[in-house]
Amino acid sequence: MLSAGQRWFFRVALWLPLVLLLGAMLGEWLDGSAQRLDTRQVVMICVFAFGPLAYLVFAVWATRSLNGRTEKQVLRSVWLAPLLFIPFYAGAWVLYGVVTLLTGDLVGFGMMVMWVVLLPYLLIAGYFISGLTVALYWTFYR
Image 1 (cartoon, one colour):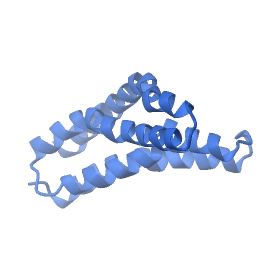
Image 2: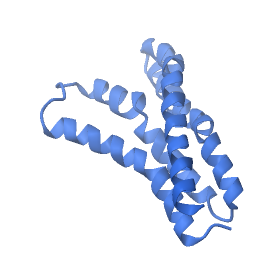
Image 3: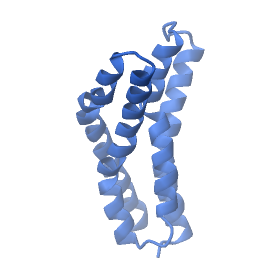
């Protein structure tokens, strides 16, 4: 079982990317460097393309799954996290595409498959963060 400090470390590592992403988005908006976008563009860019909503759901799920796990299981989960995040990320895009199709807009079909284009970037960023998490864990807890 993980100690309280180890659980805290993994929770911080899990939630920090979301906090940094939202902070960067808010900072861009506050300093005025963000372009003026209509509501649909904001939804597309902020909610789906960057994935904060999907990451929020994923982080809640992953936080709950930390309970009762051993160190080895948690470290394996850290390495699998980028792959486990894919259904959460894809689900948001597909759901938006289906709703858009149901409202009569054919662009919804493209939205249902467009997330695949972003998948390599998602995996690269995910494995970078996973590697950094494991390296910091080994530095402080081994």
